[in-house]
Image 1 (cartoon, rainbow, N blue to C red):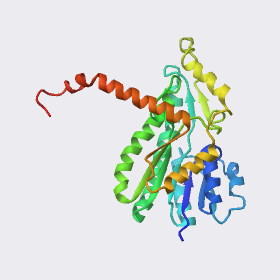
Image 2 (tube, rainbow, N blue to C red):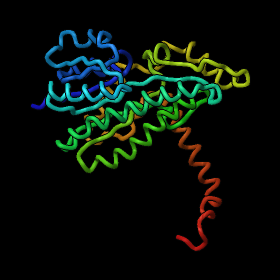
Image 3 (spheres, rainbow, N blue to C red):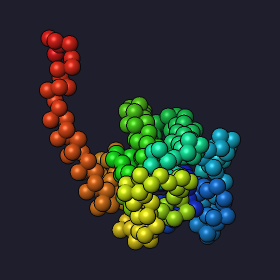
Length: 280
């Protein structure tokens, strides 16, 4: 029986850590990556024959180029890539520093793309594989103070929609995971803030800054259950393209989609009248 190999980025905390632990608990192979391999040593401990800990900063092209062949040499192939590495950023659009925003995109989007491109040749050769991109409910809606984090996740979602249509005929699947708040370290160590704060945004972006401090550790989402949900979705007969996780995500995304539908309906006449007269 084939033992699947999972390649997971960002395993030091959160979803990446719990996915790696769950994959190994099921007897599968796991390539457990982190910028500092020491942070994942406990995950690998006791599973040396089925686990490979690798140093990987997804923004480092040399490390990306080395990690994928190392995984393939060890286990023969990568069956599931989980692009989990990423972090949050808070600040009003006007408050954000351009260098911070570029760094955010380097990790949340361009690093994800680099790993995806690195594993695709092997998946195409075998005509099978799955790419799981960890997005957020903020990848389909946004909140004051989260504009650039949302933009990075919107980019992931837009790319993933096209990727799914490109690789599905080749036997490769794509799934985007859209969680709400989970009890990971996202709102702690993995959340950055703009260095400046403008008083005029205190009632909007400023409120969101305070929420991150006050709600950390009390989020309703359980990362262990999230890991099981992701694996269960991939094993289902009809895996979803978008997997929404958490009651808050369901509520927010349903409200967002309904609001978008109402706006399209309200402005439909204006929209269709923008076409050349007589066109179908």
